[in-house]
Length: 309
Ligand code: SF4
Image (cartoon, rainbow, N blue to C red; front, side):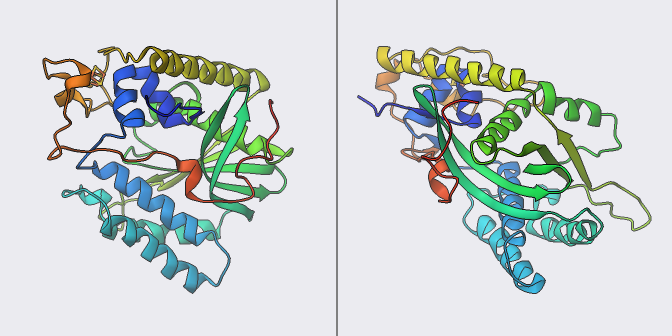
């Protein structure tokens, strides 16, 4: 009998939408591939860097802390090959450009960064980790989301990427963190998703937008739609757990546009029943916890949230 799952975050939600078996491997058994893709590492490192940079202290102290937080991510990661845009050197160069860019932006006050939260909704919890939330006159409280991409903002692919924040893979994530912030503050205006483009031009003469803020709001109806989705996801998880059955849904096994092959395909290809699968330890780790809400304690952590929007 496995421990009952009663908290859900956007990653868990996407996994259970894609395939119950995938959810089982990752979030019930804690199975993760030995090797992590480089885009996970560079994204995590960029978050860590900005998290330190947004803390109190002199710019030089914050700079040193940001670089060492980024380096710590690379030192402890499980990845052997990095695309040149995802290396520590490229992130350091991007960070220097970010500091210059930030100088010319409207000023805001950081109310908190890298905050773990877990708030009740009906009979379960929504959890996660907020990148940051800001007091930003004249808007009010703004949720800040860090994103890195190799899509160049001026390119043809950009509109499609941007669309993903209102009607695609990032849309639910944005709503999730906005709802969480609304449990902390009555003054939430919306979200700034700050997109950092990893493609720094090699020639100094090439002009490129490297930081592109996307300003995103959500209506009450959109938030309620999202909460309905969370409830449906939780019902699916509980149903699978109660029956001890995690169907192979098979729609995302081989990947497709923007998606890679499912990392659990080698396990699903074994011609045996789930209970008889012994996870090969040369390919996977087992028992890896997933609880981003436990990571960083803060005033935003459990207990003080409202029950519903
Ligand atoms: S390989 Fe296919 S069936 Fe197996 S976990 Fe992945 S998506 Fe599900």
